[in-house]
Amino acid sequence: MKVVEHDKFKGVYWIDQGGKRILATKNIVPGFRSYDETVRIIGGEEYRIWDPRRSKPAAAIINGLRTFPIRPGTKILYLGIASGTTASHFSDIIGNEGIIYGVEVSQRVLRDLLPVSEARRNIIPILASARDVESYVDIVEEVDVIYTDVAQRDEAEILIRNADLFLKKGGYAMIAVKASSIDVTAPPKKVYRMVQEKLMQSGYNPIQQVDLSPYDQKHAIILVKK
Ligand SMILES: C[S@@+](CC[C@H](N)C(=O)[O-])C[C@H]1O[C@@H](n2cnc3c(N)ncnc32)[C@H](O)[C@@H]1O
Image (cartoon, rainbow, N blue to C red):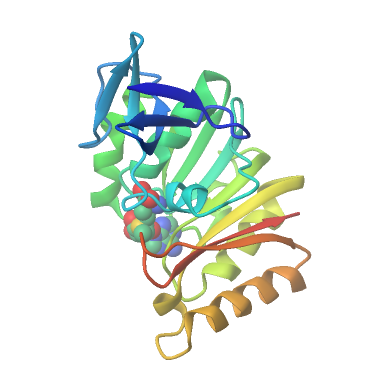
């Protein structure tokens, strides 16, 4: 088994397994399992498989995302962090110089994040609705990246409110769009266009839109820059 770092994305790796390339991140807390992820030890280092069926940014990278703004040292505001499946891979990539402010509305779900954030010192869990930015304005600082995955009808508005307040100028926002959460009847491509237009009208420049099929049907990731 061989491992190489992604040619553009620092902290993201390809493991060559029997001629098949598999995405992974290097565990910053070796021995600790953030969820039931698969682990490979190569050259004495522990790599965690980043499964595109369980994590949308992994699907976007495999499907040709050209700019991935999360790298060592990045400060992230994560809306809809849930129990931390995707966040744990972001945490590996940003390392101990970076930070993730993770907002989650469900107390039950956030409880499962707590052991992960205790082991990974770069995740700060925040129990709040991402619609209610005032409730965490004193906790969150200016960030380099906002990642949104709340699967709500007003997801674009939620992102804009947070990005206006917390995203630095020149920073990136990534929004995971589940078409059916926004409009069950419209074709997904039309929904993605609507979301992108809303973001553009609020001053966020579109960089790329990546469809996540076959890993996640009727989902896309839209990347914009402030
Ligand atoms: C699709 S799941 C997120 C999965 C997670 N991003 C991952 O990849 O590991 C959506 C999450 O958003 C949360 N959520 C929904 N509405 C929210 C809101 N207004 N504010 C914060 N979190 C919200 C849900 O409770 C749920 O945990």
